[in-house]
Each structure stands twice: as C-alpha cells, then as structure tokens.
Image (cartoon, rainbow, N blue to C red):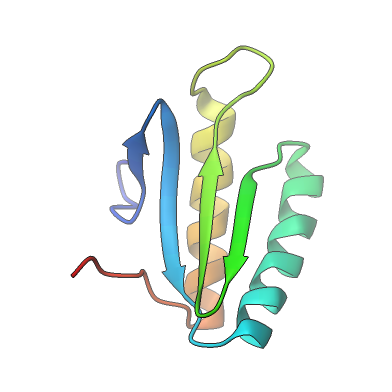
Length: 91
C-alpha cells in the first residue's frame, strides 16, 4: 500500500502484522483500533496473540479491496506509530 509498506495484499485482503511485544500492549492496540474502526464504520479482522496483532481488511459488502480499506489501513498504521508498535518483520 502506497505510503504504508507494512501492508501487503494476501488472498485479496490487506494484511499487516504488528509486533506488540506482549499481550497487554496488543490488547490496548486492538481496543484503540476498535474505536478507529467504529469511527470509520469499517471493521477489520483482527487476531490478537502473544506477542503480535495481525490485521486483515477487505470490504466484505463488495468482496474486494476499496478505498475504505486503504483509509482504515492508513489509520491503523498511524495508530501503531503513535503507540510505538513496530511492524513484525519476517524471518
């Protein structure tokens, strides 16, 4: 995704994995993400595990990616940056 390289397309969805470091930080990230998603009225699929959060978004109503997904992904990226939560690096 332009401007947010942590997002990649997998199986037609935008996907990012963030290294929260611990479960509590992950839960706080998810909680704040929920508020953002409600504000945008567009909700991602979120997997909270120790020590990461995986986020997937697609516009379920149309079955493919739309500008709403990019807007949500950008907001989540900004939230992660503000909270000091880095991208989970492969390998």
